[in-house]
Amino acid sequence: MDAAQETVNLQWRSACPISSGLDLLGDKWSLLLIRDLFQHGTRTYSEFSDSPEHISTNILAARLRLLSAAGLIERTSPDRSARNNAYRLTERGQALRPVLEAMALWSQAHLKGVHPGMVDIF
Amino acid sequence: MDAAQETVNLQWRSACPISSGLDLLGDKWSLLLIRDLFQHGTRTYSEFSDSPEHISTNILAARLRLLSAAGLIERTSPDRSARNNAYRLTERGQALRPVLEAMALWSQAHLKGVHPGMVDIF
Image (cartoon, rainbow over all chains, first blue to last red; front, top):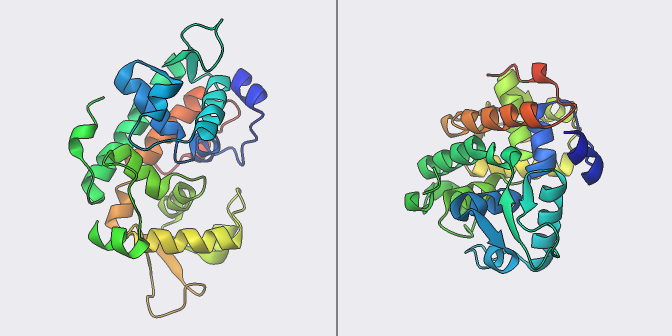
């Protein structure tokens, strides 16, 4: 991932792929934005904010920048400003489907109070 | 997960299983400790610290408490203190294998400078 690693200036902690994946995606929000894009195709700033987890606008802006720089998402109208735009998954972002699916299946089986019906993206 | 949710006092941000999974595991370290246990079977404090990502001792202690309370790992000798002990995966922790596997495969395909050989746990 030349572009992503250089633009985002990510330093992998080690050569382990699990570790590198977490360097980029190991937080409580990034994969939720990816989830929203799987569910809805495209999302604007305000639509992301309306998701039930209520991401704050500063975290949302930072994560959209990071995921864009890493080539996982892209603006649907690149000419417009970040705020007046919708985002969609790139092919690299869509390739995260098995990660989300595995996480959802594990949570449904092992965490209490989790709703099976929410994972209608698979 | 009655025990986990009550002991750890985790509040799910929503009923979405991806979100709940990230409430528990959405950070840069927890899944690395799980990885170490998959690779080595058991790990002590100092063995965890020796992993190439160099987790700090305070983060290590906090994550071991959280993962224990959530029922993902357990001490091999429950009578001994946390520091003088080894940890192993429970069945619930072992069930995370597909999550680690999906993350590793994605990273190997999409991140530069990631070593395929490190994922010898699958």
